[in-house]
Image (cartoon, rainbow, N blue to C red):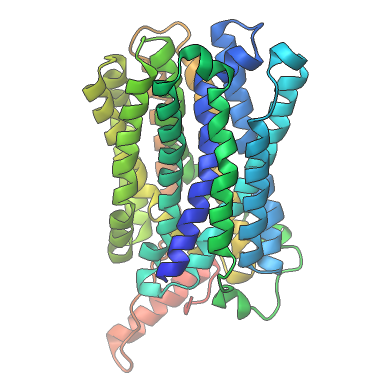
Length: 443
C-alpha cells in the first residue's frame, strides 16, 4: 500500500502540476501575450476561457479513459493519460505569442489546453481506483486520500517555480521567456512519474470482474445518471473554492488591488500546504464517521465562509488574505479528502472507472471552468470587496449541500458477528445500502 499510494500521489502531483501551471500563467501573463488587442479585463477573461477549455475536455477524457479502465484495467490508464498531459504541457511552453504568429497563437493554446484536460480527465479515475481497490475496506479512505494530496503537491511545485522565477527575473524577462520554463519542466517530472508507475500491479478488484461492461458509458447513463448528476453537483463547490483561491484571486488581487505577485503566491501556497497536510487526517475521519457526513460539513462550512473570504481578500493585506484562503481550504479538504473513497464506492466495479471519473470531472466543469470567468465578470463594477463573488460561491455551496444530502452513505460496515441480532441487523443494513449504490455488500 505505501508503494501504491506513493506512485499514485506522484502521478497526480505531476499531472495536476501541468494543469495548475497553466492556471497561474493564465492569471498572470497569457492575457497580454496571446490576446493583446483586448482590454485588460477582456484579455483576462479570454485567458480564463482557455483555462476553462481544459475542464470541458475532462469529462470527455473520463469517458475515453474510463472505457479503457473498465475494459482493459486501471493500470494502462495511468501511463497513457500521463504521457498525453505532459506532452501537451511541454508544447504550451513552445507556442509563439500573438505578436509572432497572430491569431494562430491563441488557437494553438486552445488545442493544447484541450489535450491537457483530456489527459487529466483519465488520470484521476485510474490513480484513485488503483489505490482504493487495493486498500483494506476499513482504511480505504486513508489510502485513497494520497492521490488527493497530489493536486496540492502539484500546485506547490507549479507556483513555487513561478514564484522563484518571478523573484529572480525582471517583469520583462518573465513575460518574454520566464513563464515558459514551468511548462518545459513538466518533461523532467514525467520521467519520474513513468518510472514510479512502470511496475505497479493491476487492481485485484478489476481482475475479479468476470464480464466487463461492453460499453461502460451506456450503462452509467442508463442506470446511474442520477448518481452522476448528484456527485457532479456535490463536487462543484470544491472546485469553485479551489480555483477561486488559486486562480481568480491571484488575478484579482494583482490587477485590481495592486498586491504584488510574490505576496499573493506566498499567501495562496501557505494555505495549500495546510490543505495538503490535513488531507489524510480528514480521510481518517471519513473512515471513522463516514464519507457523507464530512461532505455535508464541508459544504456547510463553505456556505458560511464565502462572504468572510471576499471581505478578507478585499483588504489586500497578507495576513487577512491568508486567513481567508485558509478557511476556504479547510472547508475544501473536509469534502475532497473523502471523495476518492466515496465516489468509487457508489458504483459497482465493472463500470466504476467510468462512473466515478465522469461524475468527478463534470463537477470540475460546473465549479472549476465557470468560476474564474463568472468571478471576473462579477467584479467588473465592484469595489474592493467583491460581494457578487461571495454570493455566487455561497449559492454553489448550497447547491452542493443539497446534492450530498440526497446521496447515500457508503463507508464499509464492520463484519457482523454471526448468530446475533445485531449482526443480522448490520448485514441487512449493508445489503440495503449496497443496493442503493449499485455495489456488492462485500465491496
